[in-house]
Length: 361
Image (tube, rainbow, N blue to C red; front, side, top):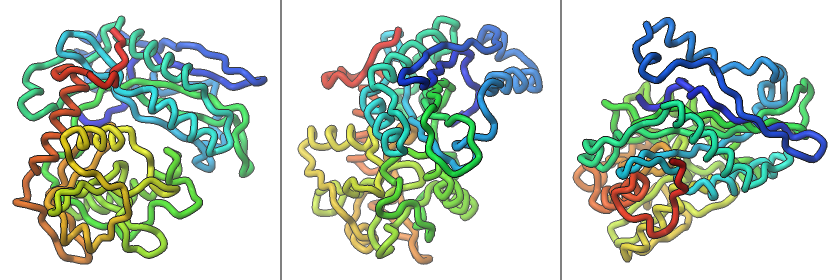
């Protein structure tokens, strides 16, 4: 299923006006999940489309005209005990706050962010819109498991000239999601495109950042690759991140390296979590610059991380027409241990000793 715009019927919206946020929940047309599943494709598409329109929000705005906006990706995951829980929403709240502040918008309060996510997921679940835990997901460490993808995003007020947003909306919608990467494609390729530049917005989860990422990923997919990887803008030598995910290299020396945070690297919540889980296992983790030459010659395992990707193995990396296979070309032992631990915590098969889960129902 991957990503789909089959939005759940309940959404959240807050408008900043006169120094305060005015909140509301909106209920869009819907039937029961079972009735919707039985609809003919055309009717199902029409119903889904009807949930994706907000007629009282401007078409011409700083967001639609200039990409001035930011968003988050969060997951609510069905638990083995039958519940539903959101993974580390406090960290997403902090990043969203910083993103809006970095774009000179009035930042959305962290406590409102978490409450909005919990209540939106809860209201949809009460209508039956939630995935149910399946034991079969455990067989592949939840690589193809279902979850609720929560998308909070900002949307600017009407405007036609290049300007900042001073009275934005924050909207939260939910959709079903499963595996992120498409089946049948393998490996990654270094793209010649540049994702982020120093003193730019690479550290912000900004809408505009993903235009280049979408183009580069499309080009990679057309060439038969699962993912693309960006190098730095200045020297074109240091690895930065994937199309929409952070990247890790487990070196032959036993050190796990991931590019250090800066103004061109997104501070991923999954990245942060995997660093902690790796250190819990006694693995030395180094956050530093890593050149493409070092990555290709010294890596025994490679994986990318993100809300959607989890810890997804990258079996090979192609650069300037040469393909380098890591290890035996299969998912590495450390990669799968981290994936199994991360997903086990997220889906409730392992204890949440770190307090990363926020219960919903």
